[in-house]
Image (cartoon, rainbow, N blue to C red; front, top):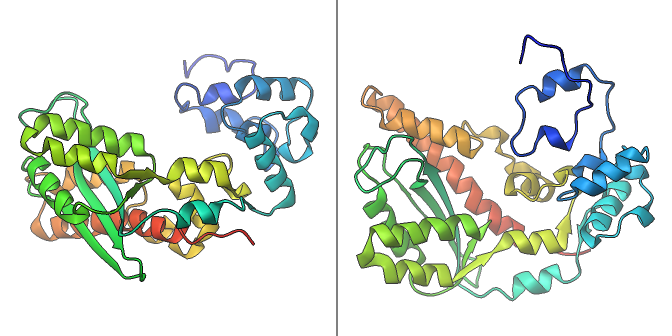
Length: 295
């Protein structure tokens, strides 16, 4: 493939679907620079993007609004043109309606092709770490975390610490509930004695992702509502750039190194501190995102 001729086709949405192509930047380098905000930023709009490009529209800021029928696409286009974030007047009402105590929860997971621990399967996403900020109605904020870098199976310790952290009262706030809820269902199957308590946690979950998808957009998010894309537009001082570990992939690499038997104790402690700081940033970020209000 690499030694053959490059296909005579421009880069586009097909380069990311179903997975990002490793040659994307190579191909883009041979093309003229595109607009800062291309129409390919529109989410879930493959056919629309193809039509707009066929009509000669490549810059989202210049697309006629009459060509966009989807309300979300219109919000993205208007916010991109105006360079002013879209904040729904209903956002503050929705956020304020979430009860207390609020438990902001985030997991980190690891996958192994060959299972490392008994009762786990190939490519199962094993939770090895969580962070939980708990916020009271008066604003008091406390933090709990779990991370075991001993190399032993982390599941039982993870679940015990998690149930202690979230207690039995108050909503459990997550970013993308499908991920955390699925992990808890899997844990409930593997640890049947905690099944009822884990399912009770799922019932208390409140997903902030669809709330933000419906009520907030900043053009610097570039069509993504990942918390790492949303956070810098709300609290730029909390950007992940100051952390040694800045994403989930790097967290997996660090965890693998931390539990390796050849890793020295000082290096293991260093990696543990970096992992704890990264996961804590995710849940603290959610507390800040709860303060966004329309102006």
